[in-house]
Amino acid sequence: MWIPPGVLSTLSFTGSPQQCEKAHFVPGYNLGGEGFDIVTMQRKGAYVINAEMWNLGNGTCKMYRNSYMNGENQKVPVAVVDWRNLPKCSMKVSSILYDSVESLVNDSTSSVSNDWKVGLEFPVDPSVTVGVGLGGSHSRASEFGMKKSKEDRYNFVRQSVNCNFYSNQNIKSNCCPAGKGLATLKVYNLYANNLYGDMWTATDGSVEVKYGTVTDSCMLNHGTFFFTYVVECAPSLGGSRCDEYVSSPMKPSLAKVFYTRNGVLLGDSMRKFLKPASQSVSGQL
Image (cartoon, rainbow, N blue to C red; front, side, top):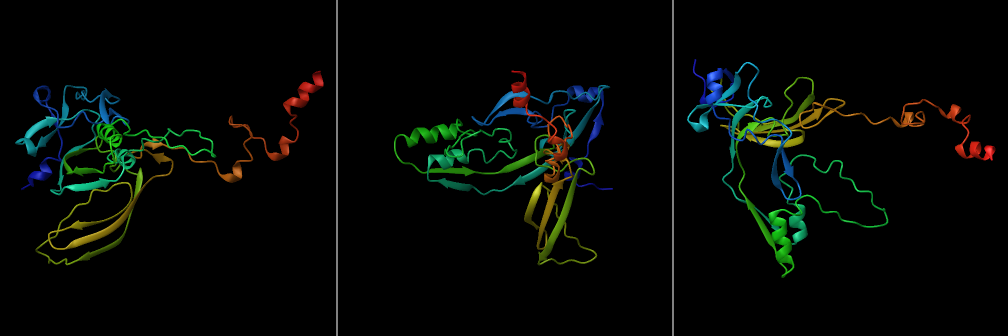
């Protein structure tokens, strides 16, 4: 049986203790779980995931064959669920023009895909208009722009080329959950242009599914396939892999029932029997 070379890189195998001791880690193995300074847009070198532990408990390890490095067998950390070659490179330079340093700073965190703003709400008087700058405000690009803006009026241009060669579930946070029942996938609006084939030929394509609502197209060998899908975490689940518990908000109909946050059930009918603290104090004077 012949197996395409690209498929071999996605198949893991258990390496012997001797193989694991000598093998190198896969490229980018230590990117998952590393702290990232959202203000300076720099890696911190501190980890919340042990990316150096590869021993499965008996000296063995999970290994993959890296077709980009002459088929070398390489190991992955225990925390990595899976790893694969995922060549996705567009030889096009994208350019963005910023007409102010403020727009440059605001867009400096556009490459960060997680919800880093969660928990950073600031209590501000509604009558006061305040702008809070956090993410990317001290990155190299932002500091360069702010320095130039003090000298004269400038326009700024950002140019980039996007290339990915490897993928794993700890590095790519916006990926599908590994377990069943953690999310739902709904696909609709399917149509295609210029497809052809018969029982002896085939048109193959693959789509990397991401969270949220996505409308995209897939270029096949013969034609283009258009689709729209929605991926949602299961009820009471959240996080980048739908494996974190998320409490459900209280129904408005129950808001009047809970008198304290400790869960003491005191309905409106019982609340009239409670004496205010001020009355009990005044009665003792």
